[in-house]
View 1 (cartoon, rainbow, N blue to C red):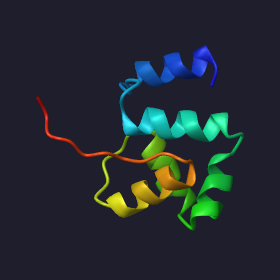
View 2 (cartoon, rainbow, N blue to C red):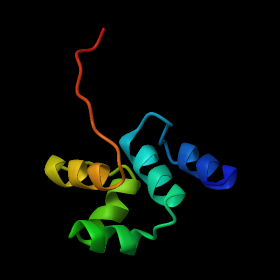
View 3 (cartoon, one colour):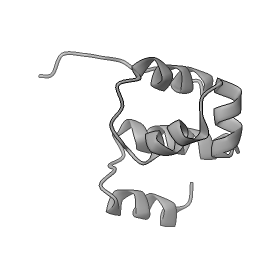
View 4 (spheres, rainbow, N blue to C red):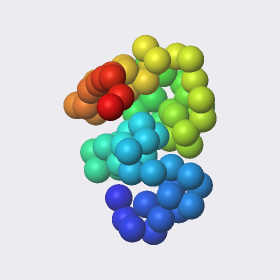
Length: 80
């Protein structure tokens, strides 16, 4: 992902530790469009867009499905 895109994401309040930032980075580095990813995961394009924009969702199973497709995992751990 280019630095311009990363800067725009930070400006929109998405830091490098956010799921949205990480999912978009993985997608772009995999040379996939949002539409490609949506089709591959069997998820709507609007869900992928919302996910990458950091919009809140209660559909964690879909977030996990996208992360797994991109070769990532979501880990829940106790805060320090």
